[in-house]
Image (tube, rainbow, N blue to C red; front, side, top):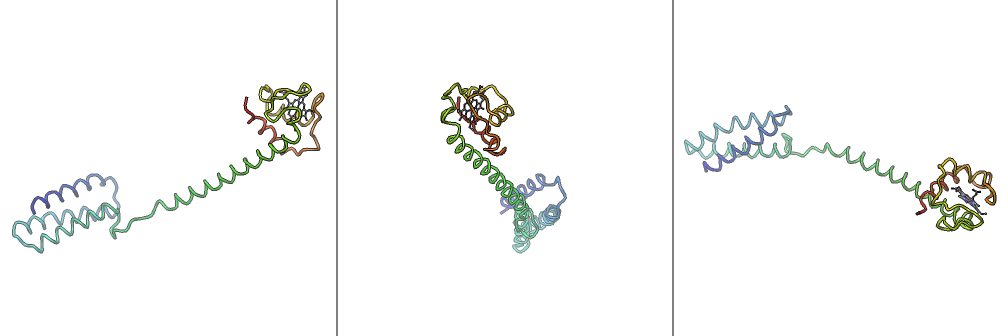
Length: 179
Ligand code: HEC
């Protein structure tokens, strides 16, 4: 019995040391209850008074409960919930952005395969009629956009035939073609 009491005092004492950095009400409650239960327990053991010892033990269990739940009512606080919700919503909007990007790319892929692949090839490397290997292009995105808008030589410009957005997406798409 005295061994158990000793162990409990050590454990709760450890918890107290570990958590006295802040002054939440549950920590003050822990300290007060431990300070009250130590003499109660000692007196209970010395006088072989079962009631006192049991009260002291219950006190220590209650303190352990407080330490574990960080709450006087032993109910876990759910502070993490709003964080989790905002996490979910931000990953939902990220998901939508990602989906839009995927859609833009797959639209651009469809346009590319219909309009551009007959000269540039599906992989961008065909080089028909002097077309440049798109995967080896040294042009900046702005220059590629200009090239697609205005065309040059054999390649007719797509100004008026494709929207600016479609051309932007085409530039993104041809940048994804593997070398
Ligand atoms: C009729 C054949 C033909 C078609 C169709 C065509 N191109 Fe071209 N493309 C060329 C030729 C030829 C060149 C090289 C022009 C030059 O530099 O004189 C070129 C050059 C380019 C360049 C510049 C590459 C570089 O590094 O100089 C880009 C980018 C390009 N094409 C994209 C496209 C896209 C996107 C489409 C479809 C919307 C397309 N082309 C359709 C023939 C074509």
